[in-house]
Length: 320
Ligand code: CP3
Image (tube, rainbow, N blue to C red; front, side, top):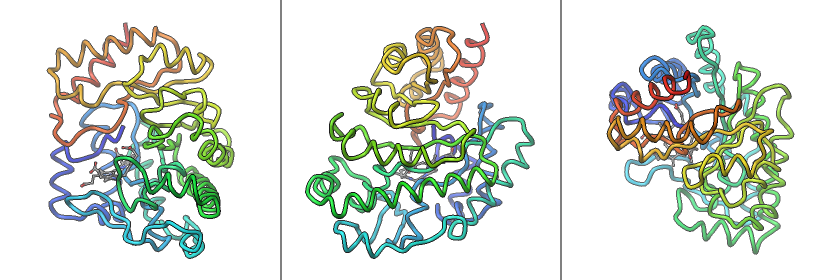
């Protein structure tokens, strides 16, 4: 889950003083924001405070986070010429603040909990580049994907190799696990996922430094979990639109699973939250290889006490 964010008072205070990109580029503040939820919530892992879209900025597309619309890409990528105009760069040199924050977090955490690095998967990154921001139906993305292989293929290949390089640099800077976010893959049919996306996600994961666990996250993909597994990852993330035990059955019990509480459930009462946690743990059946998590990020409207109630319930009920 995205565990830092506007539902936490500590984060809102910093955001009143700094822009989102400013926070990401200040490695002291980014490290502080990473560590705060570990202390405040008592979660079992830290995830670096950064964003999947940071890697797009050095490409020269004009990344901004606006108040009303969320992330915006000024120069949308919709043709082969656009793809060819993307700036080539080395993530290690272009995003030094990410790796500095990583090293500072490792030092601040002092081995108490592991630190997770992350990046966007090629499809989700491509959707932002093509749409120019978030989207409801991904129609521009699908238009390029179906009708313009001369743009789609080199774009996905570029994103796959860049993402592998970026994650490997995070691993070198101290990431103890990495998570690949394909947040919007659920807008695709299984056949389109297999044909247009899977080979590129597979290339990304195959390019990662061996020995570091890889979490493959997506939402809305309950209908093609087997394909996600085929693309790779030691842990497959599932959202709340599928029962955890059914998902695990379909994936096979020889792969780990992450999930799958609806972040919207954190708006219910702490008693209700506890009941829902219990239900997910019941479905996990005490098997090894279940990472309890939300199926997506925490909504800004969520009372922080409810997030703490969830973490406490997971600890208490899974210790039984
Ligand atoms: O716990 C942590 O510190 C995690 C940090 C984290 C952020 N983004 C910080 C962030 C992580 C893991 C992400 C990943 C991310 N970013 C994803 C994949 C995961 C998912 O939730 O699907 C995606 C799709 C993005 C793109 C993105 N960044 C969007 C759509 C938005 C705007 C919507 C929103 O929730 O505000 C962002 C901004 C963003 N990234 C915020 C944070 C804390 C909020 C920015 C603010 O302070 O206004």
